[in-house]
Image (cartoon, rainbow, N blue to C red; front, top):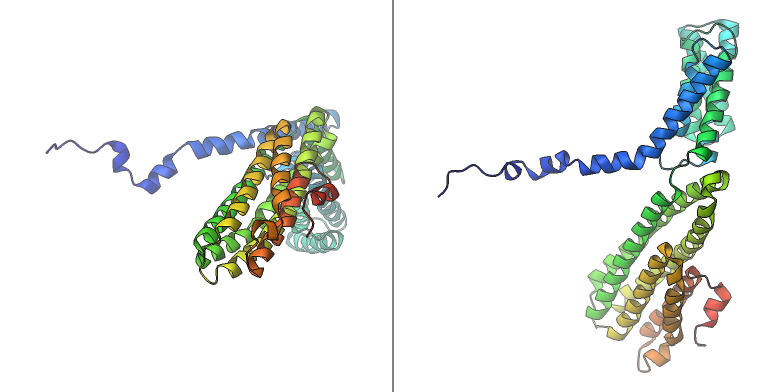
Length: 368
């Protein structure tokens, strides 16, 4: 036997290898590159304008407002940035008034925080609005200023700079929403595969797992909704993203249809659980659901290439035309027929995702 030491990679525990892997760090940095650029440009411009043009000796707040309002969060829509800026301006204004009347000190800080947070909570239900206001109030009370309301002007300068860079140096509106869309479609595909296998085998436990997965789809829908809203908001104000608006609006239409489709998939999953009570395989019903799953995959493909929408639409129409429970299962029981009927709204939602109107989609179904 050889006495040679094991390779270095084998000597490192698996957990440590994952921590030493640079790829997640590089991916995180790449995804934050636009946000970092936005913050650097906005803070520099705001500071330079307040210091060089307005003559403010130390425009700290002009820079801090840009950093706090832009941040590195996924949601960089102008409305959120503006809301954060307004929260900070409220904190600056309240603290400036207290500093003018009472000066600075521990009890002035306590009073400024209490009043600022009270006013902020009255003005907005968002916790971030109140916290942003409180932080700026602390800065105003603790850091002295040469003249009153200089810091309020600095805050306005910083806020304008932050809003300007969201339009002039926009974050990629497609990357986050497409990633969230992929997560939704992947989870939907796994859910449908689980239900198909459950019906083929008459496996109630597997069907219950499919139902659990179907219930968990809403969080993916919500994440896609947030990233799409953010992307659309940025695209509306950015002169550089005009071409992206129509694509994002098309994705919004697909998302709305998929929201309804996942709700109807939960209905199908519940009926699948009932159908597997007797442990009998439902091969025909499983194959119909498998065909619908293939339509879902085609709808996802059409997100990146609109030319694939007609193929997804035709595949959906072909499935819809078959959804007559008596035609598919002439000798089927009532439960099987009800399961086929539950698939009809699911297919019409998928057809709507391909660009059809709800009425036209329903017209593709056979009469019952």
